[in-house]
Image (cartoon, rainbow, N blue to C red; front, side):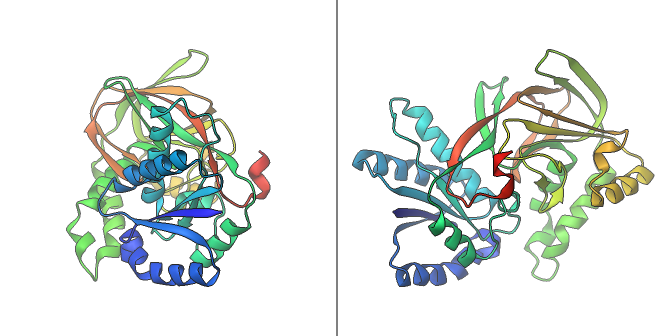
Length: 325
């Protein structure tokens, strides 16, 4: 087995740069065959993954595994590169090269959903113990306005959570050594006060259309977590073909406190201003521009007219008890 490792040195606040020498020493000690590739800018892992697959395909490599070493963003780019490569080469009939994950980022929601150990040595051990790939369902969306598509491993958000991502990324506190940790929570408070409700139209698989005039937080997800461990869709699973859609209508301040309390109890989906669906596909449309995010990355301030579904991809992971769901 040979491992093609994509390393993001800046993942987890430069954690990748600090940890890689230890990982490399461990690999050499175990006599593991590997090749390392280091990202240098945003989006670099996409092209690296495509280049790796081109090399593997050209040499007909029989036992290749790609390992994304970083956070959710690094894995997102790696999978995006893989999906693009196979889409551009439909003539390839051999099984797709599996992807593994060493979670050394800050959020790691996807690793949490798959119960991948947070410590790199334990995660590597599970990778080496794996014998066969596991089919995982990831989110796929089509932007009908631009005739483009994309993928998400965690969630596609419109409204509150996306505004938090935008504010946190552009906060002056983010780059302050002493107060960088507060930037997220300051952004949450600011977003709750400033985000205005918007009209959202949802088209379901059976053709039924629902319109929500006061949408506030909209999240399409294929596993339970978002925002660094918040259990927004407790029954969502990467082993199912369905995506979960959670819509929160604009709450009062009292309802916000109730929502947080029920969220901790994992009973927030029972609230009357929270709507939840689990479906194989659906469409979302907004009339007014709002911030959006995919796996924690900004989409900008715009309107949305998109359809959502799942696509499967082989992952090199240790199977968990719920992998048969």
